Structure formats: C-alpha cells, structure tokens
Amino acid sequence: MCAAIPVTAAIQVSSLSKRYGTISALDDVDLTVEAGEFFGLLGPNGAGKTTLISIVAGLVRATSGRVAVLGHDVVQDARAARLALGVVPQELAFDPFFTVRETLVFQSGYFGLKDNGAWIDEVLENLGLAGRANTNMRALSGGMKRRVLVAQALVHKPPVIVLDEPTAGVDVELRQTLWSFIRRLNREGHTIVLTTHYLEEAQALCQRIAMLKAGRVVALDSTRALLARVAGLQMTLRARGALPASVIAHRIDERDGAVLLRLSQPTDVAQVLNDCAAAGCVLDDVEVGRADLEDVFLQITSDVASVRHGVAA
Image (cartoon, rainbow, N blue to C red; front, side, top):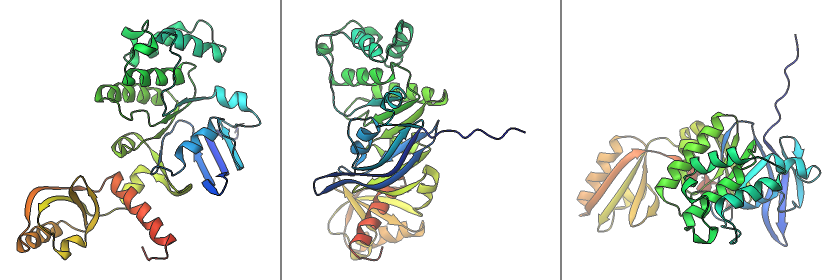
C-alpha cells in the first residue's frame, strides 16, 4: 500500500513579523491556508492584512519569519512563488496608454504566456468586460478599472488567488459577477484568500477565517465554529428618548443612530420592549435576528482589547 502524498499548503506563514521602526505591523504570525480553500482574512484598518498580503506577494520584505506559496519560499524561490500567485490589490493602478485587451495581453507576456487569447476572452466575458475590450483604460469608470485589476490577477490562471478588498466601493452588479466567477474558480481547485470589510461576504463565501488585530492573529477557525461562539440574539433599536440602564446593559455597538444589543434568549426581547415602554422611549424601528460574523468580530476584538488592558472579558 502506497503512503499518502502530503498536500502542500497553498500559503504557509511561519513566525512572521514586520516592523517599521518602532511600529509593529505584524507580530509573530503563524497561518496556514490549505490548497483549495476559500479563506477569509479579516481585521480592522491597521490590523496588518495588507502588510501580510504584500509580503506573500513579494512586494515587502519581512523583518523575520518565512512565507511559502505552494511550498515555494517567497524570498528564496521568488519566481516560482509569484507564478503560483495572483493578487488583486486595493489601489487602482493602470497604464493609461493601453486598451483593456492590450493590458491583459501585456500581463500575459510578463508570465511568459503566448497565445493566451482564449483565456483572456473567457475572463473578459465572465467579468463583464467583453464589451469594453477595445476601450482605453483612461475611459473606464472606477468600477470597470477594478474589474480589469481582477482580470490581470487571473490572466495566468494562478492556483492561488488573493483578493484584497476587491469590492470596495463598487456596484452590486460587479459583486455578483465577480463572486460567481470566483466561486467557479474555487470549485475548479483554485485557492482563494479574501480580505474584506463586508463581513456578510466573508460569512457567505469563506470556509475558514482568520481575524487579525494589531498585527496578531486573534482568531482562526471555520466560519461555522466562529459563528457558534456567539450565542443568543441580536436586536437593533432606533429610539427617541434615553434608553433605560437595563437596556444599555445589553449594548454592544451603535451604528448610524441605531443601538445594537446582544440578548441571551428570546424572552429577553419582550423584557427590552417593556423596559423601553416604561421609560417612555418611542421605538421607531426594531429588528431581531441571529448573531452574524460581525457580532463575532466585535466580540473577539473587544475581548482582546479587554485582556490587553487587564480587564476581565
């Protein structure tokens, strides 16, 4: 009987740190993204997500530690690591002298690909760019330029695809088109790593999620297991008048004038409504639902902050 051949991780991050002077962008990060996963990398602004991606892509040199893409060290075996990787950056960067198709043809050439026209056509079609193939990049809207960034990252059919805020500031149509195509690539065996501030996207798409805060991994688990960490219900109130202390005790956040509460059990809903009525609060809107990934994120980051300040979580 033959021994099983070990599957090389898509991305292996080992004891990775990055410092800029006295600032620690990443602090001893260990992380493994398995081949074929749809993996989420979440965190607030300044958590270190983009720094981590930049190191994986070979754009930034780590202070210490090691990163490998499909077993290829990003420093010692940079060529092979970059051939295995496609990255969609946050920033819009393009050559204003080329059309969309010319941009993708040149991108193919960077990877030594000839006669890549059929795949370029398929990418253009699946990203809704076929009708703009011969349009100069300068004439595209911001959303269309972002589609071209995605196409550039996919032009060499990389087995590992990293999407850094790919849908930031874009319309619903692009999101639907992009996710349909990316899901297909994932089903065909491509590994997908996603960073996003749209946590509903991560919850719907990602099989496993790592959460970063202040350069450290503060949570790493399956999406299902992370959601199971937060029990009970989420209740959102829009009220006129001061909420009573009994209701404020359940508050976990405020968003756009609404107060977000976490409740332990369904009977707490009636108690909150009764307490508001007794306090003379006029409720303009009430929503009740199960905890989602945003609740998990808020709880985990809040717990980390409490521990660092010596407060019991």
